[in-house]
Amino acid sequence: MTFDAAKLLRSHGIQASAHRVAVAEYVLATGDHPSADLVWKTVAATFPQISRATVYNTLNLFVEKGLLRQLVLAEGKVVFDPNTEAHHHFVDEESGEITDVPWEALDVRRVDELTDLEVSEYQVVLRGRRRP
Image (tube, rainbow, N blue to C red; front, side, top):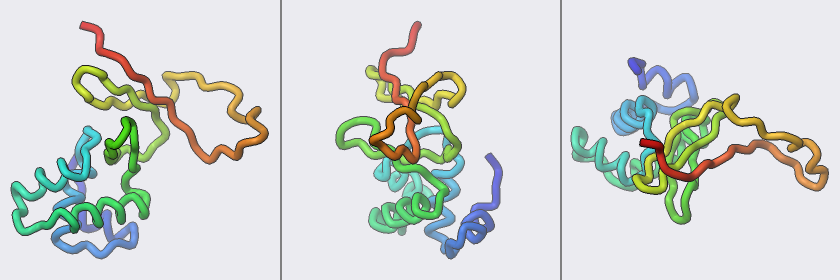
């Protein structure tokens, strides 16, 4: 994905500091679902002066501004998803790899019949193993 990270940040009301641009260039272009620590390690490899706290704060800001989704797909494991469109997830139980599943691939029915709940969004998390 080729994009102007600074321009994208500014269009979402975010000051495009060098640190934020460095984080955006990685996390908004990845097809993966990285943890905050993985983002920090990856960005620090080319931007060594960036602190872990700056990465965490930047990721949280990106979530707040709608550039990322924060997901808890396993107990104690928080990851960030640059795909903010409606979709589901598959978690490979052997590798831990998370794969996007297109929204239309699954048919979730009767959510509107849950009259005692006010559902603002939902997603299905599938778990298993990839077939050989």
